[in-house]
Length: 253
View 1 (cartoon, rainbow, N blue to C red):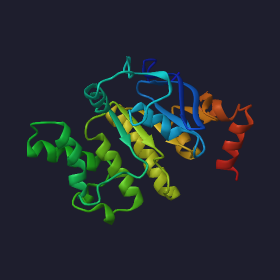
View 2 (tube, rainbow, N blue to C red):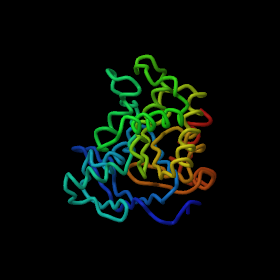
View 3 (cartoon, rainbow, N blue to C red):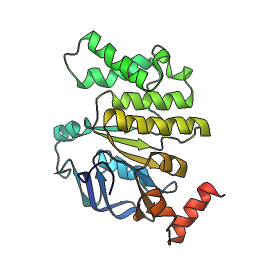
């Protein structure tokens, strides 16, 4: 059990998803506990991103149930789904910044769109506080094209946090980054957990990211979770050759 809580904020049971003959998820069961960082591990194409897209309603499962904050997501109206999405922050792999907007405007956009009657001072304070929290206050008037890959990741996380989500979903947060920048992003994920009291799912195939950020690991192989637990529990006692091969690929090869 995670150290933070035994209260499940997401409960997934018997989840299946296929695309024609490609059976991606084949009976997924998983709980996410309040306050923890849960890392979902797997090689590219194993369905990690499909899983979190289903969680936020970007895709629909073929079978299975999902409860978020104790409420089933099945049959939610568009209004109810949008209200749920405001409680979940989705940090995209490519950061998904608007190229035509400055950093300030990128952060302001979801805030102004979803929170009414804010004063200019309140908007500025929120934007400046979040940029400070990710260490990029000086970029506020820059364009995305002027930022490094690591800076874009940080700005993307800041924009996700602007609506104070209770759950954070990180999709491959260290993909395409150099090793030093990866460490910075891993540290930021942990800082977000502590400072904003978030509950998170971190999707990755990077075991260094997993080890540095995860309270628990869930290894997705052939459409199912083959092992769930702490890093040492999952990898140092691995009997499944697929899990051992995944470890060797990251740390030996």
